[in-house]
Every structure is written in structure tokens, then in C-alpha cells.
Length: 511
Image (cartoon, rainbow, N blue to C red; front, side):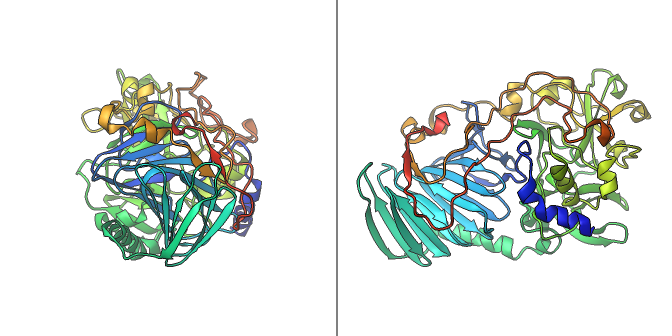
């Protein structure tokens, strides 16, 4: 294990260029009408809880609506009539764009090499320490108000750096090319939106589940009211859900969506259904399903699109072309996208008790303790991102699993509907005004070189392949159509700003 920890501590310096980010933001709260636009597409759809967000994804909240995205180390909360975009989200950068509305950022932790920046029409707002921050952009887009209730930040506009300390507020108005007008004063009393954010913070801070999992794992606080923690002599800490149907099994009620750069991603129906489906493993503990989160270590756990193995072939039943089952404890998850050996180790040892030998020999002689819990569907239901429940799932004949292949990736290719989460496109009042979408903002950090995440269905490639020893795939594992590599941020800003901010005229919808 000591060797694994050394490898993990060096991973941030050695991650290969082709590796996707090790984190995603979760849509963790929706109230009212909230619209979502996946990166790289034009359509807007109704936002849904538990959907992961990454570079290029956008949210719009209508009158009276609110939304929250949880990144583990940070929470981003939107008030009504707010237009929000993740310009860049990777292991070290969270760069967001706010063209109108109100954003609260609760920053729990900030690493030395990590940057968090909010770009508005007047300023690039850089968070320098953990704390509680609020950013308001008025409807006309000609003023930004930044409030620091705890922490330290810097607002940069037209080459001028404006420090904003704890319990301070600054209102900045600036015409392009002119010096900003700055009005600094003490932070005002909290309003109803501030109180809402503080209640959400307390819920996370006091969560009993924080004792069993890393607090960098989004969604852990939702486990508290929906299950119980047990100590199992074989697995250690185990969480058992208490609000599930009698016939429930993991990865049974929800749907699949296509999210680049990870590909097929599970979206669970349960309000608590995020952490247990992107981290850890599942097993039968007595008569109940239990989620085993893996070891709590000092390294941030690595996000995965779904901890499952896929199966396919005619042996599943008439008209059925794809099935899947949850991976069990100590079983190696093999990504369907190209990854480095370092990533392969990190994504497994931060999610389960998996040995280096098991990772090197992934799939060789694997038993798969949960293969009897397979969920199978027709190919069109899977590829179209259709909702999967007891009515859509197809019963697998007894003994069929003895004759089907276990694969790293699902067969077939996604339809465009899968990128949209199987939801109908929106129009009219549910889409942000064009003037808001196209409003230029100020930024310090350069946008990623490939600022649009290509979310169109990929070019077909052979998709069925049995698990192979690492000798057959020395550095990468590609068993499905290659999703585009995530944009990489080339330069990291320092925590104190000296270089001038720049106003980008890149329209938000064209990024």
C-alpha cells in the first residue's frame, strides 16, 4: 500500500495528456425551472439532478428558481435569472462565467496549485483562500458586485487589481477600455439567498457521512437521510439504502447519457444517487445491497462515469443487446476511454481496496460477484438515453450470464438524444435571452485550447472486446469509440494577480 500512496502523491505531476479530469461537478439541487445546455450542442433541455457537469456545460435559472452544483471541495449556487457556464473544469482549475444573476461560491479547500475564477462582464474574480463568496451581475450587465463574507479574493478589471477581503463588498462598473469605477464598503447583512446557502453549508458540515468518505466526494451528505452506515467484518464501512423498492438493485432505476470525455454515464433516479454510482463498489451484505466507498485517504477520489461492467450478445435474450451489472469490492474497473497507467491506478485505489497486481491483471480470471444482478435492455432504449425501470428492463434467462462476454464498454453508439439525457429540447422563455448569452466577459485565465467539448456521437469503432491482460494494452485501454480528449489548461495563474485581465468577446454560446 505504501507504494500506491507514493504513486498517488506523484500523480498530479505525472497525469498523461490523454487522461480526462478526475472530477466533475454534480447538479445537486434544483428548485423551480432550471435549463441545461450540454457543452458542444445548441439545444437546451430541462436540468436534472445527479447529472455530472464539466467544461462547456451551462445552466439557466428562471424567475424564482435556484440550483446548486457540488464539486466536493466547492459548491456553486445560483439564484433566479442566472446564466452560468463552466468555461474550464479540470483537476486544478474551476473557471466559470457569470453573465447575469447571482452566484454564491462556498470554497471548502484550495490547493496551492489550484485556481478558482469567476468571469463577469466587469471583472475576473479570483478566489485566494477557502471561504464564502457572492457575485452579482445586474440585468443590464453594466455592474458587478462582489461580496466576501469569509476568505480573500481579488477582482481584476482593465489591468487594475482590486483586493476584496473578508466582510467586504465591492461594486465595479467599467466601460470597455476605461478605468473601472470602484465602490468598496462593508458587506451588507445576509438576505434570503445568503441564508439558503448557509443552510446548505451547515447540512454538509454536519453530515455524519463525512466520517466514512472523503469530503471531496460530491453527494455524501445526501446519504444521511436515505440509509444507514454499518461496519462489516469483511468490507469495513458499508452504507445500506433504506428508501428503495423491494426489487431494487444498483444501476436499475435511471438512464444512461453520453458525456464527453468519459462517454456513457449513469444518471440515477434516487435523490441520493450520485456518490454510490460514481465512486466505490456494491455488494450484497446479508440480505441487502450495500455500498462500499473504499478507503478514506488524503487523496481526492477519482470520478468515474459508472462503476459497472457491460455484457452483450444474443445470449441475453430475444431483442436484447446490452446489459450491465455493478462491480463488487476488489474488482478492477477498466475505463472505456484511453487512460495512462497512473490514471488506471488512481481511479481504482481511491474507490476500492484493489491491489496493484489486480490492476496489472485486470479482468484475468475475474469472478464478478454481482454478475447475477445484470440489468439488460434493448439497444435502442440504451442508445437513446431512455429512462430505465422495471418496465423497460428485460429479464435475463437463468444461466444466460454463463454464455455472454464481459466487456469494458457498451456495444453500439449513442444517439443524439443520449447527449441531451433523453429529454426534449426547450425553447422560448426556458432559454436565456440572446443578449445575455452573447455578453462578453473579463477573464484572466486563457480559455482551453479546444473550448468546446465535442459531444456529438463518435465515429463507430469495434465496441465488443473481452477483458485482456495489460500486456495487450501497455499504456491505454480503448474499447469503445474514442471520446474527444478533455480540454487542457496550459497556464495556471498565480494566486496574486499582476497581469491585466482581458475582456473576451467570445460569445458564451460559441465557446
